[in-house]
Every structure is written in C-alpha cells, then in structure tokens.
Length: 300
Image (cartoon, rainbow, N blue to C red; front, side, top):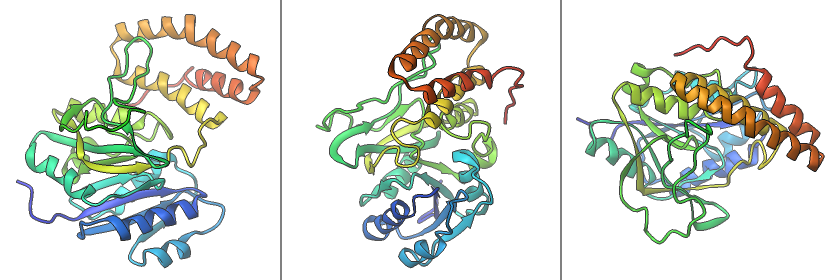
C-alpha cells in the first residue's frame, strides 16, 4: 500500500550545462504541483563549479560535485546514494516539468502493485504537441536496436492509455526505493546510453513491470549534453549496443546479432563514415567494437 504524500527525490545530472540546469530548476519551481520533494543535482566534474548558480535558482537543492565524470549511470548513482525519498525520479536536466507530472507517475504505483518503473509521455520541447516517447518497442534480437512508440507523431490522444512497455525512458524515470534496494542501482558499465534498457531488464527479471503513463507529460530538449550527433555518441552507442546484447540476450540471439552486425552494420557504417569524411565518427565506431575484446561481462 502506497502511503499518502510520499517523499520524491528528484535527481538530475549536470555536465558543463549550467544554464540548461538552471532552466530545469526554474521549471520545477514554476510547474511542479507536488510539494513533498527533495531536489538533488549531481555535477559530473564540470570545468567550473555551478553550485552557486543552482542554489540561486533553487535554494533548497542538494548539490553534489563529483571529482570525475562518472557518466550517466555513475552520476545518477551518486544522487541515489544520498536520496531520502520513497520514490526516485531520475530526470534529464534538459527537460521541463508540466503540472501533475509527479502525481501521475505516483498513481501508477498506487494502481499497479506490480509496477517497478514508470515513465511519462515525452513531447519535444521545441515542437510541443509532437510526441517523442509513448513507450519503447523491444530491442530486436537481430539488430540490437529498437524504437520509441509514437516518435515524431502529432499527439492526437492516440497513446493516452496507460500501458506496459519494454523499457523506461532514461530522460525521466520513476523508481520506488524498495525496487532499487532489491535490484541494485544503475549498471555503471555502460557510462552513457543503453543503461536504462539494461536496468529495465534487471527490474523485469525480478518480476516487476514497466509502465508508460500518458497522464504525465514532460518536455525534452533532446541531446543537449552530447550533441545530436557526435563521435562520443557514436562510440557509446556502438559499444553499448553490443554490450547490451551480450548481457541480456540468449546465445541464439547473440549469434543472430553477431551475423547481422558483421555482415551489414560494419560495412555499411564504415563506408558511410568514409564517404562523408567523418573520420572522428569512424574511429569512434571501431573503438566501440574493439572495446568488447577480452572484456569480461559482469552483472549486478
């Protein structure tokens, strides 16, 4: 039974995006209608200390400064370590709250005792009314990729029913404390990208389900930290796509994926980067592949 008015710990990361995070904090002040919250900002070793700027906008925020960039998983885990909430709302700093966001997510856990995680509906911040996320399709055992349900569709209410989904959206995910204590914190092996998919798989293996809540809406500025397309993004998407398959798929699926990746993905991406003159992306792509060799896969 969910107790009345539980404390929610809102955890967000900052890395050299002080202005973006300040806008996020203003959004909580201006739009959030649920008051029993604590706000934790984890700074992943930005070049300048942003603490003063954050506290000027949101004086009660708890600010952690990591001595090194711990990535998405490690940074959020640092916030989880000091969070006191009954629920953790892990959310990107490049988002904007809307009224009722937290209440709707809590309602999932009141209504569905088997809920282990929940994410809201996402709209693009710069194209409000256009859906980014209304749930996730399953990662294909063949390609190692998946898609967001409803992505780039005009929101006409076509995804306005609560539903189970395969994975939470890493940009905004609510998790009860007891689930984190049972399953463990986010897998830090990934550093960036695919970690929420892996965490979702771990939660599902414990018998919980993942829910999409259309009654909660968040606006997302999308890839403000790494850039829409960057060699860093290419490296981690390549590396972690393979890593996720190694950790979460059957041997049969892994063999299918290996065949697809070797015969199609490697030649296609290599030729594409060469043709476009994107040497940085090409190096990052191959670094992501070679990272796998002699790498023992560990599990939480």
